[in-house]
Length: 266
Image (cartoon, rainbow, N blue to C red; front, side, top):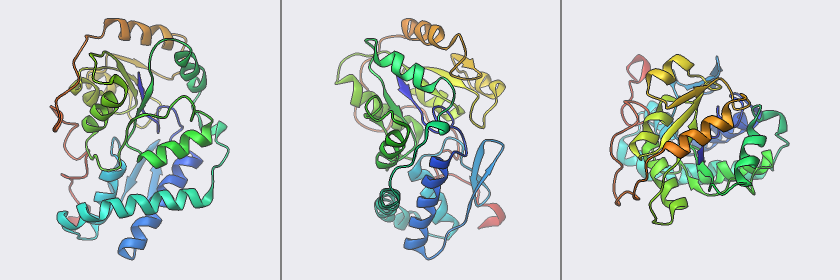
């Protein structure tokens, strides 16, 4: 079972999310000389007018650099440096108590799953160092360590495939992604997994249903959450780990920072 972080486990616009994006803005500014502010509105996040729903850290950094006119070759070369600077900025500030940043039902669901036989991990657009920092802040680092991350991957499907590789150990698998965006749904299905979507992020239940989520709940503390997850897992088909290379399918135009329309033609 794979969990997204922001908007799924952690409240949108939370203190730890704001520290994360602040560290990213500082890293972008250190590399380029300037950075715009991240905008939080209606549980959503944007940068320079670009809706960042479903974006990975790599995709978001690509947007920030492209808004400043950087060519793709330079963006690709700078990504590791910006990610490293972002992680350094977060570490310098230390961890912060984040119990109130967790969405209702998160701890109970994660802890309850750990106690069973199901392997769990992360499928997040956060860079690995950022995800680990957030889990330390929330007290879930012992339960959620491995998975797929957004250090270099700009497509959510790549993140899910990496998470499967980390947890399946090369064996046939079946599983469920728990997420809050349309990208989580399509990425789960591209990897042969089912998806429980929650409308705790910036995407409505109607949009998640239209995207093909196998089940949609308003929150993870919904009375039906555990039962629904059990049913999805039991009904998931068994798949074999994907061959090396790009995952099949995609996550929708613009969700990877490669194909975006720059507001105002920038």
